[in-house]
Image (cartoon, rainbow, N blue to C red; front, side):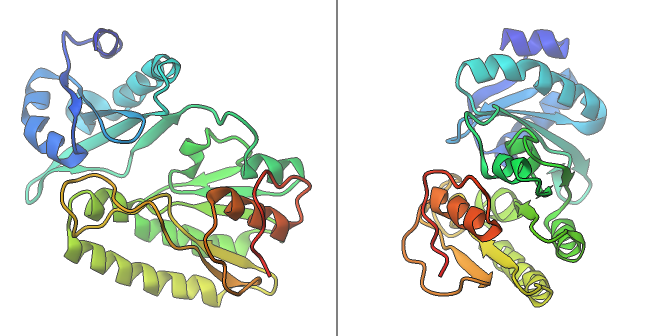
Length: 273
């Protein structure tokens, strides 16, 4: 906390506990605006999160703070330092903005993005993928709300050259609805996603593969605010249809690598027919 205070140029911090990001921002937002002290907290993930007001504290100052403290946290085996900027909304109170930034440990080994780049393939990241993979192997990154990310994904289907890899992450199911246990909001988000992904699927070209999965579950009807189920679906459209069965994340990567004909495929097995 002393290192955070020094980097922020403040005499203290707020929080320093395990908390839901939306709840701790609601609880300490006013104190943060009054004192200028950053709000620090963690979750069940291996992360250190810093929330601050985009105007009163400053977005650039928040990003600089997180960038400066990230190496120290990485040495302590915290996988990511996450900047959580927010503003005050007259109707909803303290509200997170879309300017989140993750400062992650570099991947410990080669990833699917690296394999694709090594074979001369274009790799495009949508959402927080660029941050998560420290931009390794990634040529272009696009961010925004989930609605904007769906537009980016749709454009990628139209624009990306043959043999390229587009890797997208839609975060609002988790951040806005799952952690907040907002079942109605989650349901509405699913309907919006279904409508958007239908257009993406309709635009798939011959030989394209679309895979949909998740890193964890976050049941909005469950108790608490943490992630819930760890077994998640893997759905495929385009080439390679058929029953997949139980697979691991390394199998998803190996399947994409096999589909692209990459020279490296990692330890997983391809489930493509």
